[in-house]
Length: 246
Image (tube, rainbow, N blue to C red; front, side, top):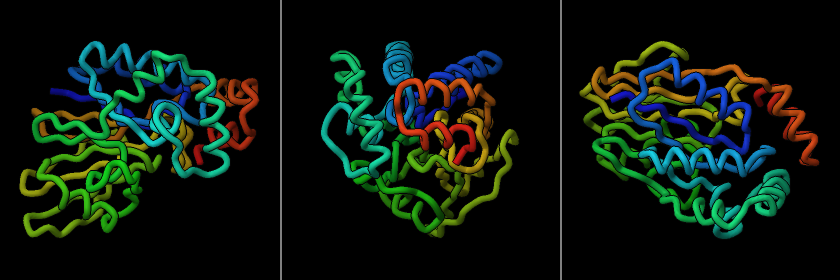
């Protein structure tokens, strides 16, 4: 099975559509969306509707902290994030809010765990930014592969049979063998607001037959996305982030 994994779309229609178009050039059996469908970007309704359609057709979808803040209850956030969430909440309809609120915090399918943030306490929204930060997730589940987002910067870590966790180097576009003697955790990166200095949508492709994972990047029209942020009256900093990928 080949699984396309996306996360942190953040209301960025241009980036999300570019990835969905990119998927048409690959053999994809399943799609997984790891939360933060909304927040920051200018098109939360469109992005929410597309994910709801994907979920209705069998995609996995879990809830992120921005989805939770928009549809369930306030979350501790920066002033910039709070401004965007308040704007987002006012744009969403009842069906969209209901969909976001209904999403689970995690999903286990086979030996793969899908979660927005750290697997050891999904509702705490902890950031997995290093091998040390990844260790609690490995201790919390027996899943062989943990897929998460939240950080907006791709990361790969693995745990050996003794529980020693190490960060692993990777190159976008090159398949990584998921060696059977180790367990793996991948922070996929962000579709709609990457923060690793690359202004392209980030996603991942998991091939369970080959036992490979590939981090991928998809170019999109960042200028158009930034223009929509400005036209919506959202903070200028959110437009600049899209142009710089930071």
